[in-house]
Length: 121
Image 1 (cartoon, rainbow, N blue to C red):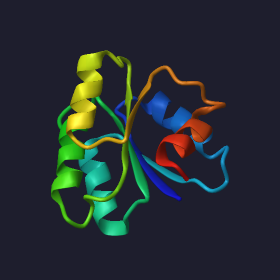
Image 2 (cartoon, one colour):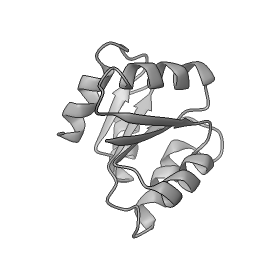
Image 3 (cartoon, one colour):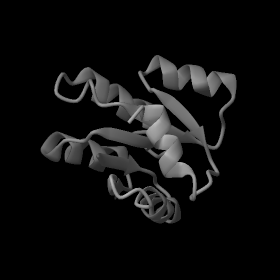
Image 4 (cartoon, rainbow, N blue to C red):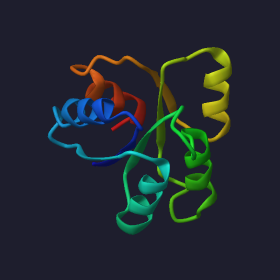
C-alpha cells in the first residue's frame, strides 16, 4: 500500500516513515508541504494520504480539498494527524472528506496498526 504523508516538521516526517514502515505492506513517502504531496500523488498515485492539519500554506484542509476536487485523486482516502482532536477540528476534517483524524503525539509502535484499522485494510 502506497502511503503519501505531508507534515512540515522534519522530525515528524522521520517518525512517520519509521513507524509506518514497521508494517512491510506500507510503502511510505513523506513531503514537507501539501503542494509537494499533491504533485507526487498526481504523478505516481497513492493508496492513501496522511496530512498534518496545521501545515503552512496550503494547510492540510486545503490539500485535502484539492485532492477531493480532482476526479483522478478524489477516491484516495485521507487521514489527518492533528495536535487537536477537538470537536471543531474533527468536524472540519470530516467536512473536507477525511476518513479519520488521529491525534498527535501518536505512538510510533502502534501507528501502522491504527492506520490499517481506519483504512480498513
